[in-house]
Length: 112
Length: 496
Image (cartoon, rainbow over all chains, first blue to last red; front, top):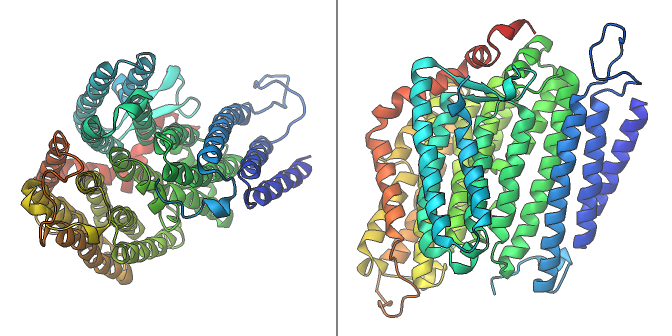
């Protein structure tokens, strides 16, 4: 299961990096979003994927889930969500003001 | 347990949240922002005296003992940095009152500024690597908005690059944390230090260390500084001054913390790598500073040189080098804010940042000219100003560690820094005065006070270095002996 997840994480990273390297702003933002999902999956995989068992060290349950990666993941998702929202709004504004969403043309813009 | 530890985070975030409600009342916002920075300064001075007498102060949030809960740890190193942060941010606030403009003030400039301070102080004081990530994000999200606040063309195009770079580096930070957690099973700095020492810093652990180094280098502008000159010259002066003074320093703090407390077992790999990056940063930054004829560009490249120089001392990993790095870090925070405010004032007066279009300003503004001269000397480390002591110690440390090339490059780039900054001084202040008071684009009214305060601080830090010597020594002792930090945080829980 961990191996399968690792491959999936690698796939998401590859797609994310590919999208970030394209020229359109919207694709870049989608790329960061996909990269973010890859990172989240990586965190949960790194904590160890255990089957069943509450996150408590009981006497009967010898297997237990590690709850810390899930807490980290939740925080990371919220932060990722906020930055993506901000990035989207900002790029829309940039598109309105600068009149382009092509990163090639965004180069070397001088003030006013 | 000491509740004083969390005040530098609590004060600005609560003040900021209250100020969001009173959006229209700018006078109240100004008052509250100044009040909260002063309150942070006072609480940090109290904290420093307590650390001085009783050792490292900790606070385990919610009563959850380390390593299970999130701990806040204030050692001398972080407390000193918080104190300098609050003083510098106070000066930038005072400068902003007269320069930032009504529109930005009415659109949450002051709350965002305080949230930025929250993130910076939080990064300095946290004792948990994931919490460090969260504080980084608090700081970064505020900086995203501050850099684009106002929405001019150059701000928008630069902020997109800035945000993209930082989002990617945040993801890499998370990846590094995930790998570290998988190998050690903990996130608390002190506990990490013990676990890494137990497991041993083999190839895989060193790889994770290098991944952390890449992440922090992106934030600090160590070698990976390609985004820095553009982003830091886009926003208005008060904002770019606080960025130059604080944001890169948080990255430097993280590098110092992680590579003295957790990954200190393989200095011949990691610290040498930092040294090579520092040397490259100093050289490339100095070339940039010498090459440009634009005030903003020269100043931003000087930020890059400063980052390289501080980390040269860290790379040596000797007591002298660390002492130098700490002196220079404190000096650099003050003097970078000062030189950015001075450069911003020149641009504010003349309406241009091109050196060739300005001349003879000293006749109209002698005070500004002399303060620029003092700041320039301090920046390049001329005695008796504040940069001198740090330079001496860092050079001594690198020589002691056998990195003659690193110390040599440091001294060589100091000369280039001196040249680049004197180029500004000679072109702007000397020569024929073709500007008259009527033709000026703005006044220096109210702008000279924060500049004056920072100039006095940089002189005082140089002349009164003996006074802070004791505190710096204590901070360096803590950095060179991780066991002090571990003992203070974990206490009796060492067996876990």
